[in-house]
Amino acid sequence: MPIDTSTLGTQAPRTMDGRTYPPYLRAFERFDEQLLSQVRGLEEPTLNRLAVEASSPKVRSAVSPWIASAEWRGLIERVDAAEPVGRRRYRLTDRGAAKLAEFS
Amino acid sequence: MRPWVDPDKSCWVHRPRNDESWARLAGEYTDDERRPLHQVLEVARAGGCRTVVVENRYVDLDYRSEFSAFWSLKFDNQSPFARRLHFFAADLAEETLHKLTDAEASSYLGYSIVRPVPHGRVGRTVLTPPPEVADATLTSIEDEVSFFGNPLKVEGVPFCEQDSEFLRCAHAAAWICHYTAVRRGNVGRRSTAEIVELSPTALSPERALPSQGLNHNQLQVVFRALGQPAILYGLSNLPRVVGVEDPLSPDEEDAPEETPAGWWDTRMISIICRYLNSGFPVLIGAQDHAFVLVGWRRNEEGQVQFIACDDRIGPYEVIPSPFEHYMTPWDSIMIPLPPKVYLSAEAAEGRAHEFFRSFVEQVDELREIEAELADGRIVLRTALRTGARYKREVSDLTRSEETLRALRHARLPHWVWIVEAHRPELCERDEACVVAAAVLDSTAFDVEPPLDVLALPGMVIVYPPDEADEVKVNGSATPWGSLLKAH
Image: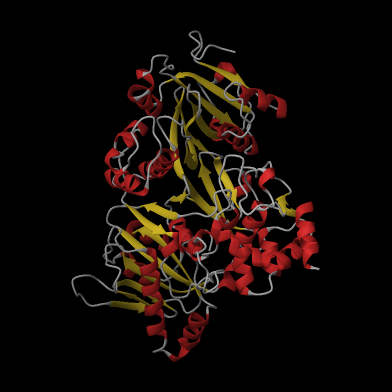
């Protein structure tokens, strides 16, 4: 379900059908700098590619929930968003690029 | 558009050749591009389908049961008849459909029943796997069809879709597991309406109809009544298995809330594969949805991918990773099993690991195996088989008459767990890769289950019941083949 864009940038992003950002995903925002930078540096990376490039086992285990967190916050988006199945590839959104710029 | 039941015809034929004609066929039944019917047609098309025969006024046991129990009671009800689409890779002539040649019959790709209901058109469906998943380990069954008197066979995994009112995703998922067991001869066939009828309403606060779906407790009652009590694994509490790497939680020690294990617990992969290797479909509960895993394979990077029958998607969906699925995080794993499979796959595998290590440490020439087991260079693979199948297939693994005789005379229970110790580098080269194997009684308890058979380099030992003397024969000194298709 797509995110309600009017809720992006708030503390409580919501999907169009009213689901709210799961609180446990907030913990993964600490990986934003490292993983957003990886998304920018790789060409349309997949989950596996990001995991392979992860700097430690801890980060590797966090890649999947971080992707969910970043998607919720509109920082990354699926290249093939219309396709429900198959391997997912991601790219940075403008919001994600702006977030990354905050770290530099 | 034809009336749903054409009174003048037993069937009609489509010969779709391009996107447009396939879309036209789908458009006769659905206007939603993401519905499973499109996936059904895509699977048939990928298999080389050139002829689609629509069997008119088909009396389907399952749909008729649904009609009697639900649709017929509505004020403005549906037709009691379904249609059955038959897919062939050959070009069939309409005038000779009653007398197919052997070549035409062998080009059969399977069937899909179409229900005359507003949502959830796809009823019982069995299709040949598409080439994309031909190398996968699948929980396939063989189904037999009478096509205007021609006996046809198709091998594939069953699929059906929920109709949103009477059958929900959990019913569809339960039916997939049930029909697989039916075709294997493990249980007698029950209709979809019977599966709904078996769902205990007392275990849910919701009214029975229109159905809101089933929870775990209700599903367990259904499976028990079907003669397939299900083993349940909660993702938050998966068992540790010796030789399987413990996953690393992404949470900090002081995290206020735990991240659901469905995001990161890699142990689920080996748990699921053990049962898929055994030929049993695996029901996944994820948030408010249920779907069935029916196979697995490795991608070009060696990572495990699952094959699913998900009634929101269709048959043979390839799931690249459980951690990037549209229903991630998954919550539970449920596997309906034969009633007397008491021993879990993990307990069997852990016990075999213990046996392998305790035996090889006593033999100087086998010390290397002990070290490899300890550091993970040798991995264990586990599957459930009938004792009869094990005895049949074991003849492919040994050239020794003495060994074959000892194994075939072994007194085994109906179901046995087989645990093989593999050298992965030999598996990758498609060479004989098994350096040890154990057979365990599936009716044993999880704590210290005894051995039925142990095979190590140079020796095979059969342990009869009733405290009889063990039978020890010489075995292969070099690795032997695996009973598993993929490992």
